[in-house]
Image (cartoon, rainbow, N blue to C red; front, top):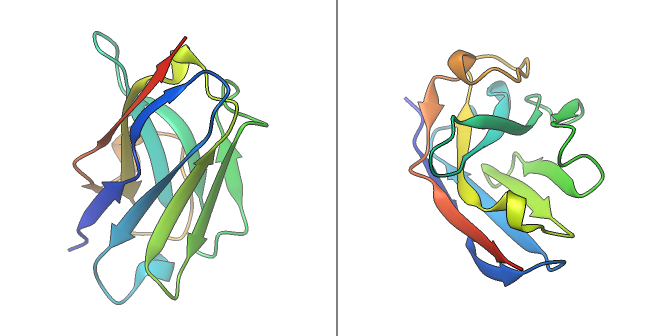
Length: 124
């Protein structure tokens, strides 16, 4: 069982930055591939970024490539999402998720554990 708790969301203006964190329970964090997903009102949950258990392999949605960076500190059981040059279209609830394998995936259906989400609002 893995419990995930996101933090770091908030209200920012266009062009500003935020860093989201996801604290994970358990002693085998490095064996879990991790991902960030987001959901805006009236839309389906969409993939944002993911990384392998080691953090060496990463993947990004085209809409955030070059602006967002996913990283992890396995010693601290923490996943991060650095978000730069934020746009109003980035407004959503952001969720972190974990797989029971080191292999990353862009598909939300392959993630077993989910956090409660943190709201990110970008004003124009």
